[in-house]
Image (cartoon, rainbow, N blue to C red; front, side, top):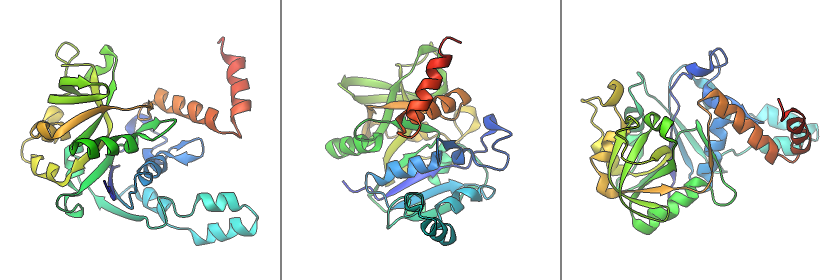
Length: 289
């Protein structure tokens, strides 16, 4: 299965990280030495994505600038003998990468944001949607590679699922499985942000989706859903027979929260060969605080 396009809803203002996000998009906040949005782009590149569609806001030009080639900076790094750094800023997303920005205008919910990509997706085409706030670390195949394989196997659209503690379930869209086979959930329903008492399961949808072009015809722009927003959950529910849920292998960090963001920096710092020894030593020194 070829998935050549990925959509990144990045129009939000990241108010939970103010004042840091007053002039810097939350997707540009770094995890160690790369912004969140770059991790998302690199994840998509692993499944062959070449067209990266940012659903954005006109005030968030820093994301566009980050993915444009900076010839002056590249040449300066090469002249200074810093080829590794030069390579790190070249061809982000692949040699054939194409970056497109679509202004969402007024934020009206995730369903509306995804719908802004309608004209850029071809009939019958599968495409990925990535919420960069959800940074997912995997030892082997990344989460999109895992989901792509399931989409190909079942010829269905795929939702990334994670088991969520009872106390947090009301923050998510929650699926109602009709049956579960290992990590695959065959679905009979999905509910947006149910109370803990009303949640149909503990399996929540987290920030990865593989959709078909047909999802756009199920987005109801005239009737807002939960919290007065156009919810992608409602579009999924109206076409639930064409979806499976997949409980991915990996660890998710909610980088939309301050604690999740800090945890991600620590986890990724411990994976960095230049930092892990000193960071491990520091963490060992403070573990009893």
